[in-house]
Length: 265
Image 1: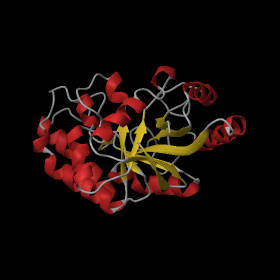
Image 2: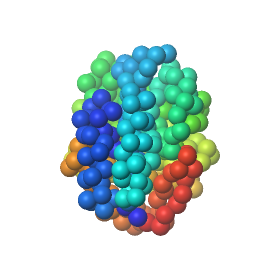
Image 3: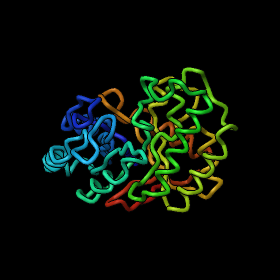
Image 4: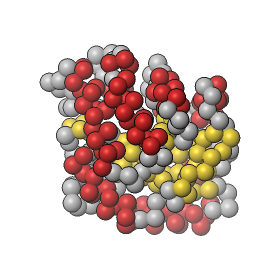
């Protein structure tokens, strides 16, 4: 089964990819199931206590319109990528409760309302400080918030680390806490194939993290291209599934109304 579970369209603030065009391309590629995961941020990009930066009503309306057109050609799932910080958990809880989501990616794009991509978060911190603080934020959110499906691109801080590869051994302890809690809560992790287009030296998350998750009894994996435009859609998903099979993973998962279903890799 060919499924892409991390897709952005015109309802994400960093994409102009029309949902209807995306679906046409997905059908051409042979994708059998697609989950739209529009970026939703409060704080630095949105307004705490107000509307998020994703126009969710418009997104939902276009999803339902497109479902009438493509419903017999491809399975469509209604999801979001929550860029949660500790201080925005209540906002996300209200948003989750307001819509019939199938799937939620729990990601960390900012800490203390400071972005990673422009180095605002890293500025004035040592490499050790900003790496540990990134993982600490994820763990704190996991401890107080449960309405999510998978951890998104778990070690993505590496993509924005101008000081180079940070040794896994230095964050092994806190990553272990994160993964143990994910397994305990019955949550998964996503394999984000954007690692190829960013020319990263490892998968996202890394083989070390994936092996640790497996060793702790974790089984729930999703695969997503993190696409924002046509060339990204479905990219390297099928090849990456084979790599995870070689690691000993047996299944990947899709979701319906937040309930996971396994499929043989």
